[in-house]
Image (cartoon, rainbow, N blue to C red; front, side, top):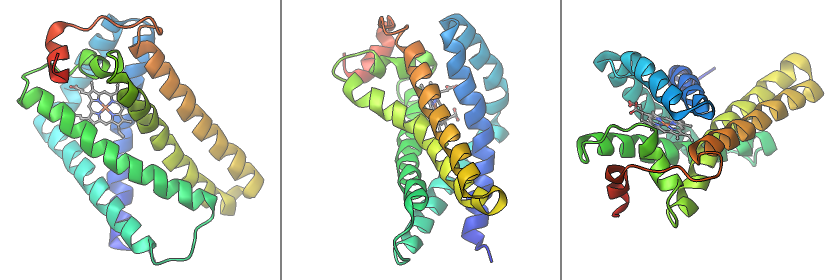
Length: 208
Ligand code: HEM
C-alpha cells in the first residue's frame, strides 16, 4: 500500500510538473528571440504570479523537497536498488538541491535586490566567467534531472505494463529529450553561444 508520504510526493510532483512544463517551454521560446521569451513569460506570470497560485506553487516546492528527502531517508535501510532506482534517487536529490537554491534565488532577487527576475536574472551567471563554471552545469543538471527522475519512474512502472525492452526504450527517449531540452535552453540563454549582453543591474547580483 502507498504511504501518505508517497501520495503527497506524487501530487505535489504532478502540480509542479504543470509549472515546469510551461516554464521550460517558456525558456525554449528564447530560441526564437529574447522578446518572444519575455512576452511569453509576461503572459504566464498572469497565472503563476497570482497570489493563490504562487502560494500553492511554493508550497508544492517545499512539500516536494520535504517528502522527497523523507522518502530517500527511509529508502536508505532498503537493499541496494537496480540502476533505474539509483537514477531516481540521485536525480531526486539533485532536484531537492536545485529547487531550494533556484526558488530561493528567485525570491531573493525579487525581495532583496528588487529585480524583475526575468531571463537576464538567470542569464547573468550563465554568461559571466567564472560564474558560468557553476551556472552552466547547475542549469543543465536541473533540467536533465527532471527528465531523468520521470524516466526512471516510467521505466519501473512501464516494465510491468509493456515489458522491459519497451519500457527501457521509452525511458531512454525521455532522458535523451531532457539532455536536448537542457542544451537548447543553454544555447538560447548564451545567445547561440555568442554571449548574451546583460543589463548592469543584473550583474550586481554577482558582485560586479
Ligand atoms: C535552464 C533552466 C531554467 C532557467 C534558466 C530558469 C529560470 C527561472 C527564472 C528566470 C525564474 C523567475 C521567473 C519569474 O520571475 O517569473 C524561475 C522561477 C522558477 N523556476 Fe526556473 N529556471 C530553469 C529551470 C527550472 C527547473 C528545471 C525547475 C524545477 C525543477 C524550475 C523551477 C522554478 C520555480 C519553482 C520558480 C519560481 C516561480 C515563482 O514562484 O516565481 N526552474 N526560473
